[in-house]
Image (cartoon, rainbow over all chains, first blue to last red):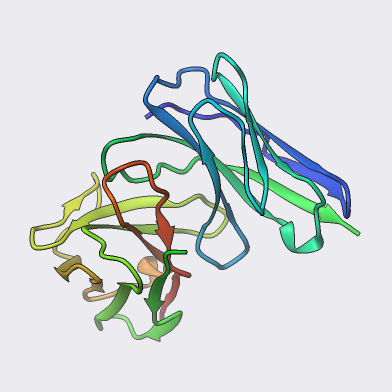
Length: 111
Length: 116
């Protein structure tokens, strides 16, 4: 599976948008971009995923560049409860494949 | 949305004893379940892939005789840590796939194992 690169940590002010970048320059044509987050001592929580079009749901927006080599997860109005480690993962479609977790980005939302 | 339930959420056991962790898919049939382990300040590491009705596939370096996995039904997989030692203390997390397509994996809330 393609490797992803994320910043180790980021801070964001409460109420502001949090923009979390991810590089996946070796992504293949059949690989989706997934975002999960893990709040301390809990299991990972699915946030959003996409192939090449931008996606939006009740939690976040996912912006994927046209060449698909990078993406940005946007939390439009960050709250203190959004403090977590955010993982960007690429995974092929078409099979029940595991998710391979990198180091992720520790997002800290500051009051 | 799909829910994965993991039990127990935490367990403390004595060295040399065995501990069983259950992972259930509550509202979907999981043909494949994955078991992960997470040490403090580290990311999740895949231990094994569990397929319903067949033997689990273990990742390199994971002892299959120590970490027994059973996936006897489409809604339940169990991980048994046999003859646990303090170095097995970790956060164990399961996930389940409800389709073979690109649907997201869903995770349980993890089991904190402490071996004394």
